[in-house]
Length: 114
Image (cartoon, rainbow, N blue to C red; front, side, top):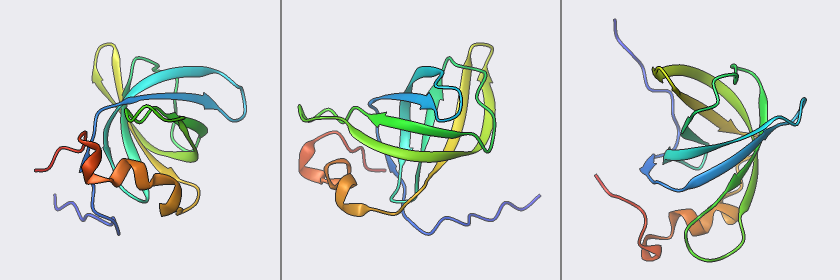
């Protein structure tokens, strides 16, 4: 099977805490970021009740000592990574590079290049 990557933006490996809440039910949880692009983010979470198409409000805890970044996103896919860990891919509702500049700032010291 050939997998076609449809992403428009380069992904960067990152690792920081992300809080989230379901926009419909207000159920909340925590996750750790795996990678991010201008269009979306991949997360690992112990919350296993997240389903594709759900809308989440994300609180990106960028480790630069400043306030969290709020981003609305839609769950595109989920996959059970381990018995207790869910991996999920989310697409941001809007492309707004300005409010993500701190994540992509290479001088911040937490982007990992590969």
